[in-house]
Amino acid sequence: MKKFETIEEILDFAIHSEQQAVDFYTKLAEKAGNPIVKQAFLEYAQEEVGHKAKLLKIKTEGIFETSYEKVPDLKLSDYILKTLPDEINDYADALKLAMHREKAAFKLYTNIANQVENADLKNVFFKLAEEEAKHKLRFELEYDEFVLKEN
Image 1 (cartoon, rainbow, N blue to C red):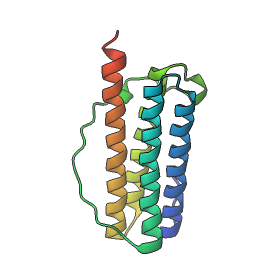
Image 2: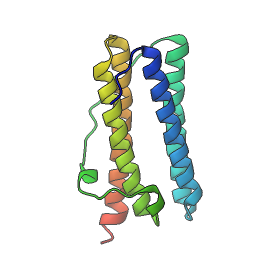
Image 3: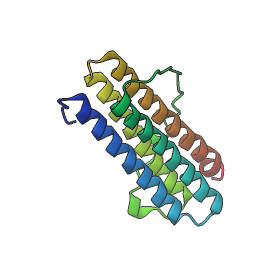
C-alpha cells in the first residue's frame, strides 16, 4: 500500500476511491435487466456518493463526529470465487464482485486509519471501514437469501 505523506493525499485518495465505487455500482445498474436489481445498485451508488461527500466535507471544513457499531461478518466472500467485471452475467455474479470490492474497501480504510496519526482522522477512516463492512454484510445476506437458498 502506498505510504501517504499528508492528510490531503489520504483524503484525495479516499475521495477518488469512493468515486470509483460510485462508477462501479452505476455501471452494474446499467447492466441490470431486472428493475429491482437496477434500483438496488443505484442505491448503493448513492451511498458511495454520501461517503465521498463526507470526505469532501472533512477536506474543506474539518473533522466530523463519528460513532461506532460492531458489524457482523458472515465471511461468505472468503469462500466465494471473485468475479471479474467482464464476467458478470447475472445478479449472483454482481453480488460476488460487490462483496469482494467492499471487503477490499474495508481493508483499505482500516489500513489508512492505522497510518494516520491524527486521532480524529483515524476515527473517520475507521468509521468509513465500518460502513464498507455494512455494505459487505448486506451483499452477503443478499447472496445467502437469493443465491444460496435457491441451490
